[in-house]
Image (cartoon, rainbow, N blue to C red):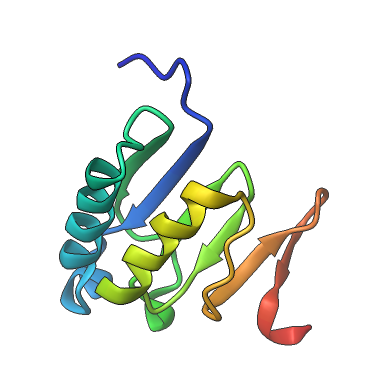
Length: 110
């Protein structure tokens, strides 16, 4: 696999609980939007197993920004990709963690 030109990486949890809560639809929606908006060469996706945030799933993690998005669904998945086309900082109102350049911070405790 050649990642030349890829600027973002989305890790999409497809662990047991996230899958039960719709992770496969989230994965298909994200990948479909990337194709529709011709962003497959800029944004790479990886289906993961459990990311350890089962009560907040489905989870999508955006790198290199380090933002964890919780409770993803079809609507949020489309909006994530649409916003990523325009800029690097996506705000869906479902951010769980973000990276401040040194460490991860819990968005809910801010």
